[in-house]
Image 1 (cartoon, rainbow, N blue to C red):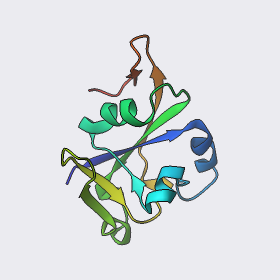
Image 2: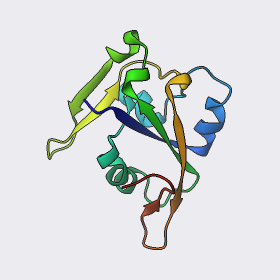
Image 3: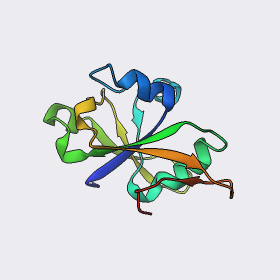
Length: 120
């Protein structure tokens, strides 16, 4: 299990989260029944695959050890790509107090994304 997991969210969901105890679920999260996360090494692939062309995105960093035990047990590592990649999925609400860093995401001229202060 990775020590850090990451959630990509829209500016609207980030604004909503500032006044809530838990992170709002995205449409994809609601559809699939869990909150989609990525590991550090999966962030840019996730951005390019699912958020291409979008602006106003943020990356939330969550140290898994800061999740309350009742939430930690609902974090599952599951294969969800044809290539067999394993991604973290949370089958519970994410307490906003577990988020330690927030990075703005910017589209770049190459058609990808830049995340200042987030090392590749």
